[in-house]
Image (cartoon, rainbow, N blue to C red; front, side):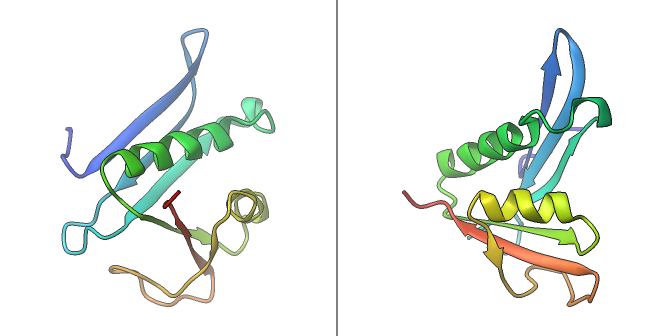
Length: 113
């Protein structure tokens, strides 16, 4: 099912799906886009695919006029936290329908040029 407020992309190498990503524009407050998922298959990690997926998700959000990207990630995902920080994401308060959780880190990034 395709939803108008969700952007999903797949990352392929030689016809094989090796990763995916999704961003959602909340229906209540469209002032930001939420990166909902970024996944790369174990055999393809460490090759820059997550960075490429993030770049494409951010480019899409910019193209539809979204000025801020937000995401939530687990405290036990150091690789993800490091990736997001290297891309300019900084910690923020919980957003949308997310509640504060000691196992969750909330991050955001301005998409303005």
